[in-house]
Every structure is written in structure tokens, then in C-alpha cells.
Amino acid sequence: MSRPYAKLPPIVDYGVIPLINVVVAFLVAGIVVLVVGESPAEAARLMLRGAFGYGEGFGFTLYSTTNFILTGLAVAVAF
Image 1 (tube, rainbow, N blue to C red):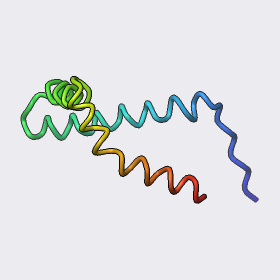
Image 2 (image 1 turned 30 degrees about the vertical axis):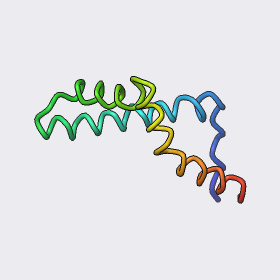
Image 3 (image 1 turned 90 degrees about the vertical axis):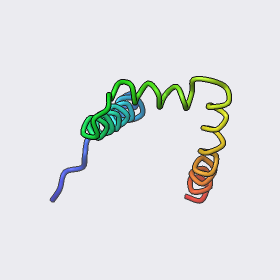
Image 4 (image 1 turned 45 degrees about the vertical axis):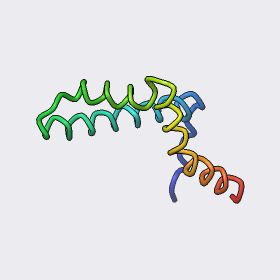
């Protein structure tokens, strides 16, 4: 017989785990950029500045992610 898994506290489930996922994603992207021969810090700075640094960039970020957001909401409502 298997034992049921222990439930994680909400702060870990909704805060710490997503933060770890973002950090790991930046680390993997940084390794790829480093292998290419560029500066990972400069690449991260440019990526964040392009997405959130000015109004037009933030607008394009929202425009590009709207399809994913609405699809996720549709799936969440369906289930």
C-alpha cells in the first residue's frame, strides 16, 4: 500500500515553487547564452527591458500573451 503525499503549505505551493521555476528558467537560458558566447546578464537585462521597460513593450507583451491567458481561462472554466 502506498502512503498519501503530505500537503504543502499554500505559501510553498503558490509562492516558492513558481519562484524556483522562474529562477531555473533564467539559469538554463543563461547557460545557453553563455554557450553562444554572450553575456547572460546583458541578455536578461535586454529581455526584461524589452518586455517591461517601456509602455509600448509592455503593451506588446500583453498583446502576445492574451491568447495564452484566454486559453488558460477557458480550460480552467471547463474543468
